[in-house]
Length: 450
Image (cartoon, rainbow, N blue to C red):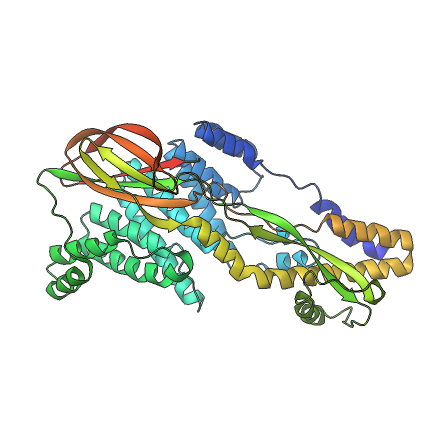
């Protein structure tokens, strides 16, 4: 029995791992108390900074206008993610014995990119535009790294980030860098559109026309104008509002239970991990298969993460200032990126999960041969620890819309009208004291949870 103690010890360490309750965070955010959500997350932090907790901490602090605290959390999250992006061999091996939750979580690529968006906004709200420019350059470098690291890169989140960075460079008067970012946005939106359903926004095309004109790039100006049309002229002594409307929540990863029959005729090596992985590939084709009991050796139960669509009630926005009105355009669909990312990873996750479950099954079989009671204990322990890795950045919005509108210099009250799926106004909120300066850009992001 002593040879099974290490396995049982690992099991005991796995059971009972607890963290923060997302419902507590959600309630605070939805009742207009983001600082309470931030404090709750701080109180329930692990001893060592981890992700996705740091992402959650950074975003709740951002919504609470605690911008330095938010930036600190995002900095820590990026350091952890960068360090973990290459797999940890020791944790990888351990996860085959117990659970995927012991694998180091580095965040998805789109999560990491979105953290730079919020991080840059922190600097903008602190009137530190240089800091926002640094974040944009870091995001650009990260995209280049992702492009080089993965041959079949899906470009999720890249179009939005390049588009956003173009606006930041434009606000800083860096026309050439703005043009480069808008070019990249055009390319990246196109690359991801087949999966995300988000086409190149008209604003990208019009921005290319404006930047090419400012830089006197005649050939490019003519090409972009022929392709995208002439943007509306900017009146004298006007500034510009750029508003990002963030709606709902990205759907959470949940757990689903799957069964795979092991047949009495199946053969696979007990001490050969490669053989177990090969058998896992075979077993994958039997998902949900029903076989006669006389042929069944063992019914393997595994837990897999799943994401189901959870669209918010608000699915668009109109912004009015006096007689002027502008409608938001979808520029980022976080839900679709989350679903498609998990879909692309499912086969690898399933094979790894099956290989781990087969390892537990072999331990159970050996224990059962030694002692039936011990076998039952080992089997129960294996079942209790079979759980899916459902870690993700849960406070992210479901979708992000963009509104760009010229406004006269001065202080304005915005009327935000929220649209439902039928494009009818389903709610509204005033946003007072929005300052617009002549020939300058004012950034604003606004979040709803409904």
